[in-house]
Length: 63
Image (cartoon, rainbow, N blue to C red; front, side, top):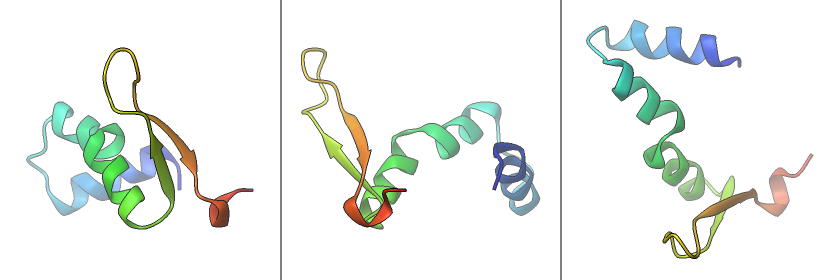
């Protein structure tokens, strides 16, 4: 699904979303945490300036 499709789907479900709320839902930490919970992403690092979070696909989701 393309990014535009994701935006249209979200606004179709809830029309009062701000641009910031859409960005957070599509790209923010909550979206990453959801994908980690679903077993689709792995997070590495501690999240600080010297060791920022990086993400990779889990073994079962590599192309």
